[in-house]
Length: 144
Image (cartoon, rainbow, N blue to C red; front, top):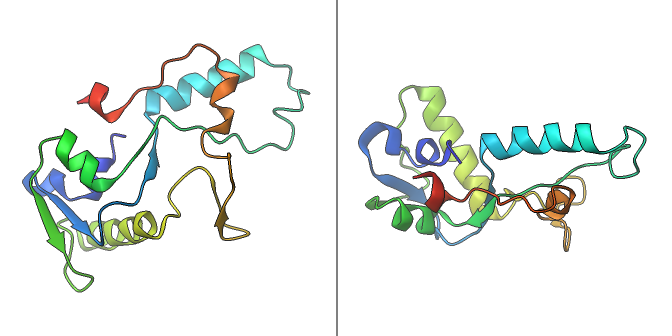
């Protein structure tokens, strides 16, 4: 979640610079939730558990669109074409931000996306959340 302002260039000028339609949902999960989840499953499940052995644990704090982020964070949306740069502090920042927004726009930035088969796996997004029963996952709204 902490990276979303950076992805839209808000770290440079406080605005949300967004390529594409701005309405494709992607996965965001707080660093605290990721660390807490890893600690929880490694201390509460046996290491030989079928939920852990050779498993991809797909967790998700929230699915949100870049437009929704801008609205919740009260950021002015600046539409950016493919030929324009998303503001960054270095050339590498600008390239990486464009790369990430391209993946968000294509729908490949969720924990349900399977890069091997190049499709969303039905029911996979956040499917491991159930392993941390009772946990309240952080949202963008709660972290602002």
